[in-house]
Image (cartoon, rainbow, N blue to C red; front, side):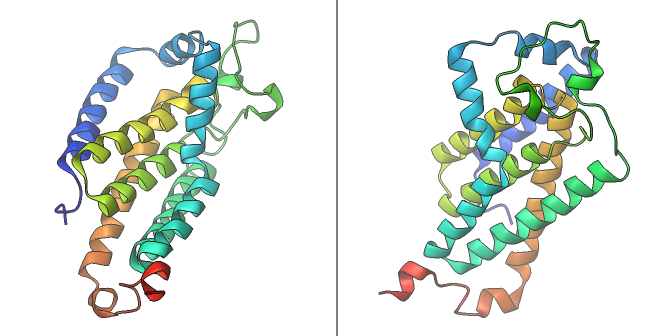
Length: 217
């Protein structure tokens, strides 16, 4: 199952789990969030606003369409991953953890907060887990599988990480929300990939092994 998942991506993800897990254990909730947000600058505003799209469903949808040109199998896998991660993340967000306050509602009104996006778009509740972070790690893991390149594995991981941290920088989520989202997205996508790889119907069906581009040649 791991033959197409670059070790570079896996090792960076494992390091992320332990390092951020330690930060969450060591720091009081809100400490890291305020520190990161207060580092705001024109460059970081543009950087994080740009990478915030990595965790957007629209970006994932474009990846689904793009993969169809290469191989329908990967496009179907991406679509299934998008649906599964959305169901799990949104299900938790709106049931068990419904109403969990986001930074905007968590910090006292007199706290000096900076928003890199218009205040009216900053949400106040249903903070845990971060759906954007779930999507970001999922789509980047899938791209790592498709391209199967060590250097790209590193690039894709840091794209997922930047997309996740963007939610903290923009004060849409706490670090723990993005941490949980990254773990959920990684596990769900990995399990789904395992299912697809073991599904003989998908593996033996010649249609799913073709793509729009290959059908033209």
